[in-house]
Image (cartoon, rainbow, N blue to C red; front, side):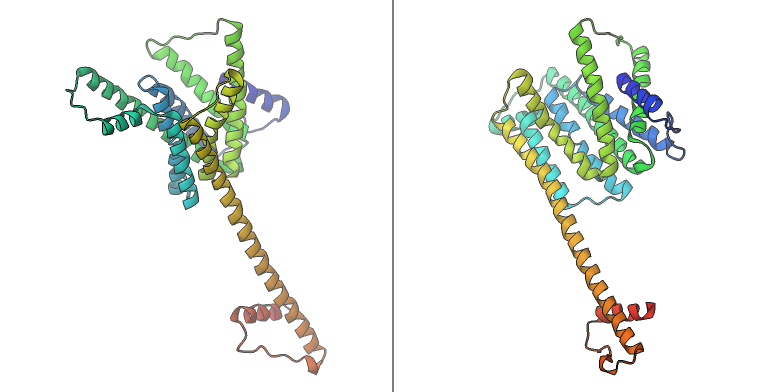
Length: 333
């Protein structure tokens, strides 16, 4: 995040001198802070859950964030949450389950298929306690992410996307540094090899563009549809895994990725289809209104010119909407 903040400073100092940097525009600073706190809670909750859960379980729980974000935007921002978006989000999450194969799901299936009558040991109780703590952190992470995304939607175009990213990066950097100083058992470590430094820089650069594009996307599209795109990162991860390690997803993982792609595609496709239908209906309505208005104006001109052959009386049997349009046009004339 420190690298991300450095890039933001370079942009606002040398490229675009924004008077609202670094605190944000007045009237929206609380929302900027809420976005920063929510994003920080989302990241910290995810990493803390990894101390108690395996990676697959953590991924599955944190991928509830798109659904949580959609509901929060529906409740607090009044955004629509259509059936297509709900079904698409649910099926995409099912694809995540097939890829991650979480332990809790495997344990549930194995318990249902085989009847095991063993006494509960102390290790089982401890494991259950750890999983409860880890699941709590993961769920808190999803609500933090939802809060951050809703704050971005509320700010809208009243702030530059990089300005929101810079405040979030600064808050995360400072809070993480204070956490290292305060929390016992955590020490600051620096990379030791060229490879580690290279990977750190790559993470910083790609993280900067990820945060910028995510924020800009949330500004331009409603939360439910924009956040659903995050499911595709599992597909991209598999592609890069194949490029770097030569591993090809197989079995349930491949099926899960196909489900995710189809789900996200359906959300985007049906949105464009609905927009096209609405636009066509609007154009047809405008065309009919314009035609009625032109006819009414020509009729009035003929009446004023004394053209008795063109005398015309609005029939009571005509369509009410057409009559209303003609009467409005005559009054404006």
